[in-house]
Amino acid sequence: MQFICLIYNAEDNGPQPGTDEFGPYMQAYADYTQEVQDAGVMVGGEALQPIATATTVSVRDGKTELMDGPFAETKEQLGGYYILDCKDLDEALKYAAKIPDAKYGRVEVRPVMVFD
Image (cartoon, rainbow, N blue to C red; front, side, top):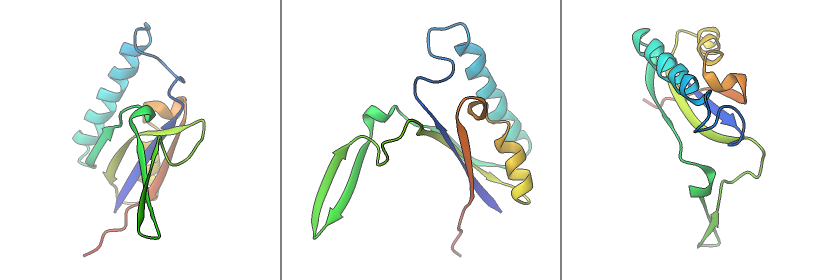
């Protein structure tokens, strides 16, 4: 069963580029990615560009409306994701807890609806 792990954090929370902590933080992501690849559960995953690059699109009464920034105005923003193929929710939660940003923000785990 596939699960998506949505990684939420405030952009200024946790280790920042240019600090001594940033290198080990990024290495933790490389190690985690290698772990889920080696376990054969990684389907995909990527980091996202900063929220300043986001554009939200909606269509109302046939008119396309664009808004700079993410849809939700919250402290924590979606920063990346992993899609994992796990035997069950418990296994997905075990892997989600190992995502480095779980220490600084939150990781939302949801089953992926697969259409045949």
